[in-house]
Length: 332
Ligand code: SF4
Image 1: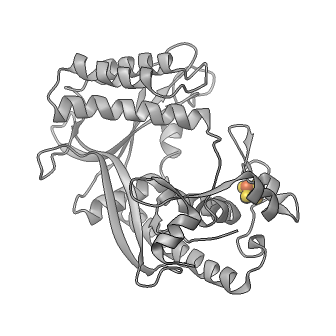
Image 2: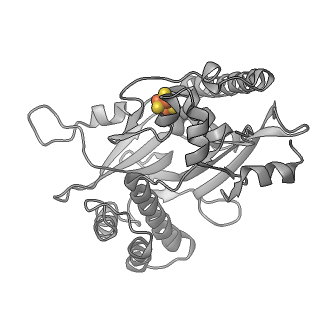
């Protein structure tokens, strides 16, 4: 199968490599793609888009709270069917309304104002990492991502702090033993070393914005409604720098492995090691989509017959067949 090291590096690629390097190779270097979608990811994406529409309507377009929430709900109701009864489009739209009732747009967090007069809601960034691309002469690797939002919150003390904010839908919450009370400390612990948000913190600093930490709104989607909980997690400068150094070092290691693989033209599993771990090879009860390739010595042929090779070639994530994309870049 053809290969191309990605030009636009997303933090999530390296998170995958941290779990299983072979999975990273399949997803990001062979660009294997099929039409299978996780219901959870579809529902999470639709809800996040609904939240973005609400906030942009209120803060950028100056619509009323009611109009803004209605626009968000309308988006959810007319979006792709999630295919999940618990996270159905109707239930997601209802939860969105209740979320903004619990955390009203005019009385909680406020997005930071950008130089162009808009607010920092879904802010896309790109940084040249200065690491030469292993396939394309003259091209450096580009770190790309989208900050869900940079927000300010005035604390009870009157002090204003700046946070990276994200909403996470979930189907369960951690509880204090023997009670229904949410265990906030345990919930926060789950995000203290979160690579996605450490990356956002670093990106904000590279954009000249110093943040005080992370605010996560964990939004349960349960059979019986429960309000969202706010989690406040500080990140230290030490931790953010440590994360960034690891990010760059992991990326350099993957580039070197890829160069070695290309020079040998061997079975990719000999260079990009499979994790072979029962729980890590399954997610939400669904086996890794590349498992058939790991179970047979004919894995490459099996995967080639069941997947397409499609590249998300631009910052707009538009899919292009890998061979066409390589041709357009003049890469053999
Ligand atoms: S099945 Fe497991 S070992 Fe194989 S690619 Fe997927 S995560 Fe890696």
